[in-house]
Image (cartoon, rainbow over all chains, first blue to last red; front, side, top):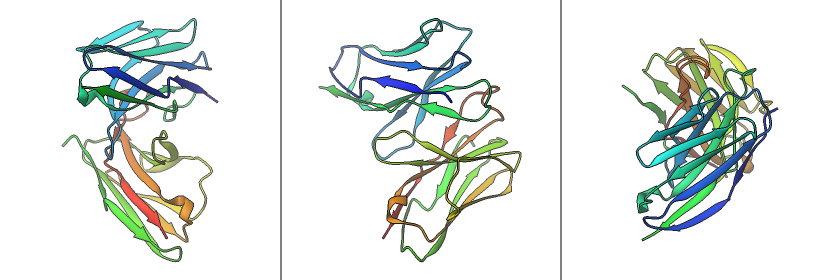
Length: 113
Length: 115
């Protein structure tokens, strides 16, 4: 099955700085890579996703890059704000399974004011 | 309506109790999911229903019993749970297969405590 590794497990940044979270996946057949943000006591919310036919996608202060050859994808948050503090999960979906996402272990991001 | 709703928000039950968790969506999604999540860990898939039929059971113990009465509702029946089953139970839905629309919408979860 798919194995997704996520680093770092914790990340502390100064407000206004950038944050980068990296994930690697094991199955080259994976073709869909969402990122979820989960604030304390709340539901996971999709913040951005990318498909395997695209190398980069951006939405305001958030961007995701995908390197299919190296089998890794990264989340970039620029100009971080205190409300960016949360746990972030990357995930990958196998083409052979229409429903199952393999999640990374999560990164706890703390933005210091 | 672009939300997945879940009831109750919190549930405390004894090991001999029987209770049910409920999930509802009115987005016309045909795939619905149950996840279990421990604190600061990723969601773990339990069950998937596609077009009201059980599509995936991730070897979940029989003390958890899912039910999909119709395309908008998903239940999780609980019986004889153990303290280690205490967790946040998340429901999610997606249009069809993730290959299509892609996005999975999560509900707010039910915080379950088993005494």
